[in-house]
Amino acid sequence: MQKILLKENLNELIKTWIKKYEIIAPVKESKISRFKKINSPNEIYDCLLTDIPAKTHFMPEGETLLEHKDKKTIEIEGKIKKTILFGLRKCDLNAIQVVDKVMFDKNYINKRKNTTLVGFFCENPDKYCFCNSMELQDFYDLYFYPQGKNYIISIGSKKGEELVKHLPELKKEIKIPNPKNFKKLNTLDIEKYYRDERWKADVRKCLSCTACTAYCPTCNCFDIKELINSDIKTIQSKRFHSSCMSKNFSLVAGGKSFRDSRTSRFKHFVFHKVLYFKKQKGRPMCIGCGRCLRVCPTKIDWVNTINKMNRKPLFNFSRFSFKKLKETNK
Ligand code: SF4
Ligand code: SF4
Image (cartoon, rainbow, N blue to C red; front, side, top):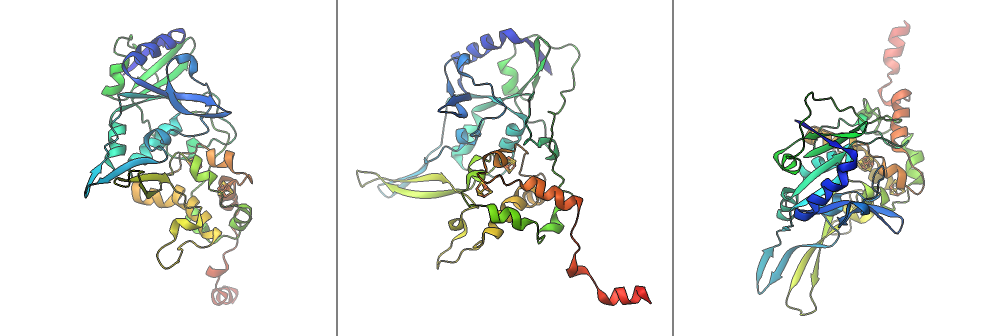
C-alpha cells in the first residue's frame, strides 16, 4: 500500500511522531554526521549518508550486556522506548537486514523490535555508491519517495502503517526506482581471484587503521570486556566494536594469530563482504554504501581492483599444462 503526503507537511508529521516516539535521525555535530535523538524536525541534517552508520543505535560502543553480582548473572535486555529510526537510505536499511541475520542477543533483538525503520529515497548518490550491484531488497517499515510536490510513502509493515494511518491512500501505486549509481561492482568471478597479484597494490597501502570496518554499517564483530565497578562488588560485561583488519582480532591463546599477515586480513575483509557471507546467508554482506572507500586514509578502492580483475584476468600459470600444449601442437 502507498500513501501520499505534501512535502511541506513532512515537519508536521514528524512533530506528531515526536509526541509518542523517540526519533533518531541524521544530525551533524563537530563536522561528523550520525544518527541521534532529535527533539524537533529542524535538527535533521539532510545528507547523502551519515558518516557514522545507524548500527550505533542498536550496538552502541561500551554497552552492558551482562551484570554479575552476588554470584548471579543478569542479562541486560536493552529495552528502549518505542523509537523511529528516520532518514535511512536503501543501503542502510539493507545493512540492518544483514545485521539482523547474525545478531541474536536479547539486547539487540529488543531494540530492533521497538524500532520502526523509516527510509528515504536517495536523490543524489555520489561517485562511491554502488548499491545497485549488491542485490538490495525492499526492506523498510516506511519508505519515502519524492515526486513533485509530494512524497509517495510505501508501507512495508504494520508498524509502518500505524505511523501514517491518517494520510490519504494513493489510488494507483507507483513502482519506486533504484537510486542512480555511477559505480558498479562486478563480483561475477571473484572466487577465481583470491591469489591474484593485483591485490598487492591495495595491501601495500593498507595501514590496518580499521577505519573501513568502524564506518561499515554491516561490520558487527565485537569484543567483550569485563569491567569491575568501583564498589568492587559488581562486574559488567561490555560490548566494544572490534575489527578483522586488526592483528589482535584473530589472536588466540599461545600467541598465534590466524590472520597474521596484512594480506590475509585485507582479503578476508573483502571476500567476507562479497562472497563468504553470501554463501552462508544467501546475499552479499556489503550493501554498496561506499563508506569504506570514502574514509580510507590511503584511498584504497577494492571495488575498482575487483572490477579490473574481472575485466582483464591474469594468465593463470597454475592451471597451464605444457603437456597439453605439446599435444595440441602435434
Ligand atoms: S581504512 Fe584503508 S588503510 Fe585503514 S584498514 Fe581499511 S583499507 Fe586499510
Ligand atoms: S564494505 Fe564498504 S561499501 Fe560495503 S557495506 Fe561496508 S562500508 Fe559499505
